[in-house]
Image 1: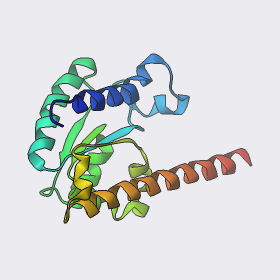
Image 2: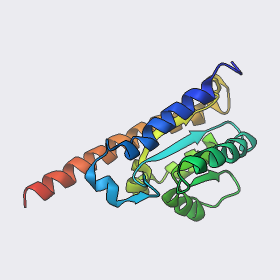
Image 3: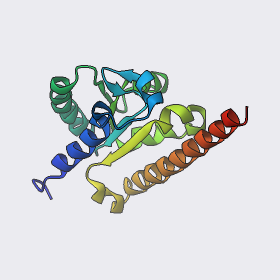
Image 4: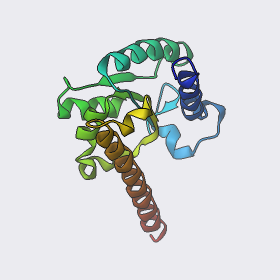
Length: 168
């Protein structure tokens, strides 16, 4: 329910993912891809039911994260952003705020953008009770399943690449 501390839990999960880089618990290859101390190899997607909530969270989190690390890039991708612009914004962002419908349309071509979408290490779902709603629930469920598939494919690709590199 509202006021139960969901946002605080989201923020703790984000801090754990982002700022573990700064404490030295990260892989050496991620250092080379860092922006402002936080790895560009780690992205977070926050999915909210509507554009207004995405924009509200973006304003709040942009301010808070800028105090910790000014290099953190937060972006909102909603229905009014075309696909090409969305992919370039995802590439440059650390925190992507979006709606289920928009993320569904972005991830439909996941094979073409496997490296980019595979860099999403945390998927945060606000208002997850929508999964039971007619009309919107199926979209949210599809997004969750697709993100699991993307992560499996990205891990398999990494393993395959490591095997090729070690066989040389």
